[in-house]
Length: 131
Image (tube, rainbow, N blue to C red; front, side):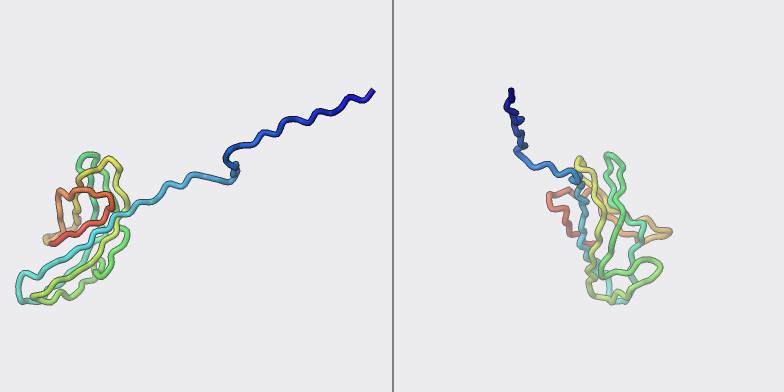
C-alpha cells in the first residue's frame, strides 16, 4: 500500500536573510570652518599642527585632526597678509554621542596656538570659529 508523501510546510521569513550581511558603524566626522583675522597691517605666517584635537571635557575623549584644507601643517608656514582674513577648514574624527560641549585645542611647543573652548554641539557637527 502506498502512503502519500506529505510535503513539509514551507516557512518563509518576512525579510530575506542575507548571510553575508554585517553591521557597519557609520563614521562620524566633525567639520570646523575657521577664520583667522589679521590683527594689524603687517604680514605674518600661519600653520596648523597635527596635534590639534577636539576634546570632550567630560569624558576627556580626544578626536584627532584628520584633514586640513587651505592651511599647511607644521613645519610648513603659509603667508598671512596683514589686514586680511585667512579661511581654512579642519576635519576631525567623531566625538562620543554623549558629548554636548567640546574644546578645540592645538597642542604646540610654543605660543600662538589655536584654541576655542566651550563649543556647543549641534546635530550637523559643522561649526564656524573665528580666531
